[in-house]
Length: 397
Ligand code: C5P
Image (cartoon, rainbow, N blue to C red; front, top):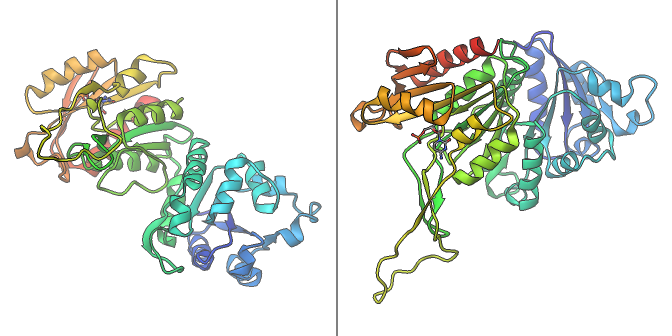
């Protein structure tokens, strides 16, 4: 899948830089060419000689290249690739990218490029969870930068948590997804997935049983057909797919804001199980149980209907697909829902507990479109996703 592709690999300065050597080997094994760029800090962790030997290509570093415009200017260097991969992407590199700074070769290339960028963040857990890094990540994903990882685990600094760079095979999968040639190449599709969590107080919330499995499979299937996918997910129990832009949210209101920010899109698939209500009188402090107190009374406010807002708003994606998880009169309810929400298609399913669909691996859906209903046999959620992605590709091309 990578044969003949050109990857510009920017290696930042972090202990995870050693994994970049393995990554180069794996990219080369798949028939792609690697143009390596080492940041000044990167040279503290891996040597230009080892990078050049594995890549079989000249290494670009600040030392040589800022004065080396004649051989390959930084603008040209930033444009020759099919994909720019930043691995490891340090907190500092992410901050520079988010701010649009250009004070060294790597950041200059990243600002000068119109090629897609995939980052594999790697840093100490506290740096990763710092509000500044989270702000930078949100800016970058909003700019269309793809991310892979980081993973959770033991860190070189002795701490435990998210911040470890994704493993080279995971980065390869993300590269393959980003470069997938397919009928949806050049199309932007957004997918909502997972449950939402609506706070009652700082420690309690209202949620639902959605695992996010079907939405995740759909996002993966769309990316495999070449789509640029923005995946807006509530706190799901399955990990997000590789090679898509992941926007994590918690509440329905955050999900609506993220969806609106991600528009325009060619298609939007609303697989999330959004809470219909939020707690209007949510407390800023943990609600205490005291002998004198009666149990708290929760007042609910209706959440925005994200699907209906997008289906009836502008810019409207050409194809808007909703889901209808029902326990009774599935097809009749879903047909009405299609009209009420203003979407093009509804994917309906029966979520009575005895079907084992909610939280399970299989799904049995009925696709409801303008031209009628079509019941698909029970199959794995991955197979449903591939079939739906193929139908979406048919509708958009
Ligand atoms: O009305 P109901 O929740 O059954 O509709 C389900 C569909 O609407 C799903 O596609 C779901 O993602 C979407 N939805 C939404 N925002 C809401 C409620 C549902 O986008 N607040």
